[in-house]
Length: 87
Picture 1: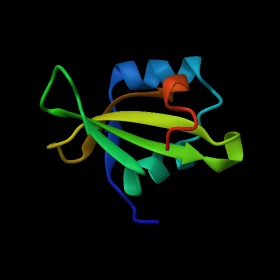
Picture 2: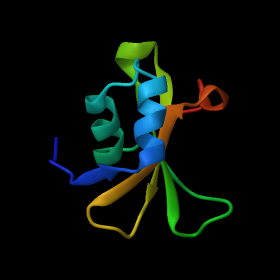
Picture 3: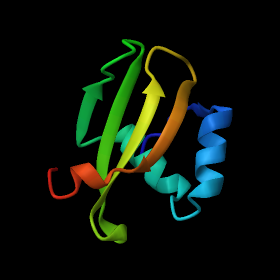
């Protein structure tokens, strides 16, 4: 895995506190090797990176980032039920 530099916004930190089932290594995996990348519908600076987490029943983790920042800024992340079985 590539060692990707990133930082969490306060909102992302709050999201992870509320979702302790999301592991840091899963976030990093989706950042490094997304199965799908979508632009945000409302903000052209944001990008949605999605990836299946095989260890978590193939659920899809969505990581929303501000794409042109260094380090990459993670806005939020969550398991996206609407994408289940679509990747």
